[in-house]
Image (tube, rainbow, N blue to C red; front, side):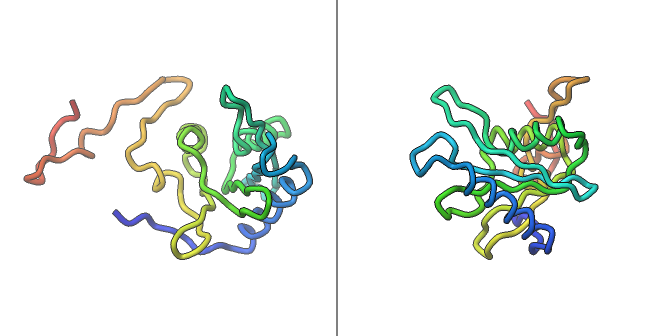
Length: 159
C-alpha cells in the first residue's frame, strides 16, 4: 500500500529549523535525557516547541511536550508537527504512542518524516490507516467492518 506524501513547503522547512534550534539549544548530549526537539504549527501559523524528557518509565516524547506547550499557550488546531534529533540526526518519525495520540486528538495534522525520497509530509490518517480510534466523549471506537475483506474480495465483519 503506497502512502501519499507531499513535498515540503517553506513553512515545513521553517518548522524543521525551529525544532532543530530547540534541540540544539537544550540537549544534554548524545546519551542525555533531552535528545529530541519538536515543533508544531498552529493553523494560524504560530509555532510551538518542546523537548523530550527521557526516563526509564517512558517520559514524554518531544512531540507531546510541544503539543502541551501549544495548548498551554492558546493553540487549539494544528497543521503540521516534526521531531528532530540532537547531534545532527535530523527529523525522525513519531513513535507509535505519539502517532496514536496525534490521530486521536488532531486527525487533520500532517507529520514531517524521512522517507526513501527524502523528507516528506504525511497526513496522520495515512500514516495510521488501521489504527484504533478514541475520543474523550465516546472512548474507543470499533473498526469499520468495510475495512476488512476476505480473500475473495468480499467484505466481512471484523471479529
